[in-house]
Image 1 (cartoon, rainbow, N blue to C red):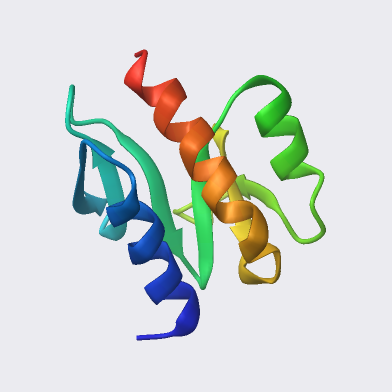
Image 2: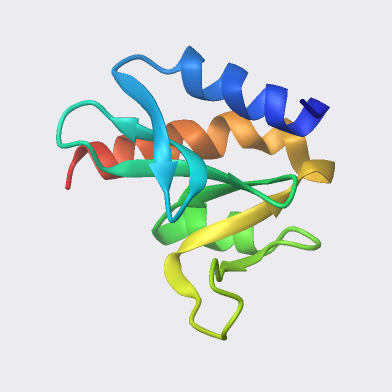
Length: 104
């Protein structure tokens, strides 16, 4: 397991009321209430479902971009893929994503 993947699991398990699962065959964590994914792990990056200022801040990071799991130009507009070089931001984005998805 890579350092990035280990960090993904540490962050996901560190947030209450979550379950490890899969989304599109990728590792993810889901909010227990409702079972909706809020973070995923793909290509050594952590992927977050975000809106508003959190979305804009994540997308502004160098190398971050909208998540396109198919690679066919069909990006998921609320999901931002953030590279491991920004690992210091991962916990706060994960918390913001969990809060957002918990309201859906």
